[in-house]
Length: 226
Image (cartoon, rainbow, N blue to C red):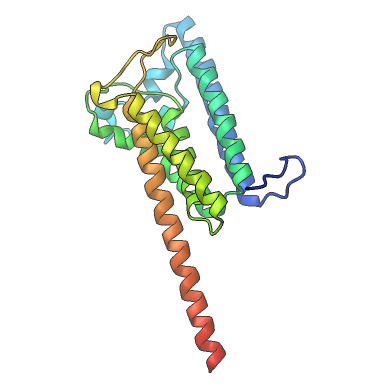
């Protein structure tokens, strides 16, 4: 059984706190954008239209791949994603994610939105969900790459859970859906994009790290025999 120490007493590497800092930045940006949107509604302007993902504007305004994560279309949308960001932050802290995982998640931030180019029918998109799905995929892949059988089982279980969630959202049924209880439309393709991007980047990061480790060990063995 994998023993997980309490967050208040366990020793965490600096990289894990960088992971938490990124989650905090996503939350802060979302709150600022939400306040700007509410102010804009009172003055007849819309901050969301200046920040959200619009595939037609990708070439001329590529920065939207970052800012789209900050855009939320309702109070419930914002609160759900803030709660999700806290959960992903705690997940990375518990996993003691290394620097390579933090880099993978940082790269997944814009690429999760860029993946939506595969769905040009999605004219507008905003929210943290794609980036958060990427963060979970990155953490699970890091666990899956561990030498610990217990951690590998946890990573496999998390990835399996993500796959089941994606299938339950039937992303092939349409660009958007409207789940019961939600006051906005949901873009299942953003979740798929986030998981695939996060998983792919994490696999690449872990493979490069493993390769470099083997190379250093081989060079060390050669030096030892000289």
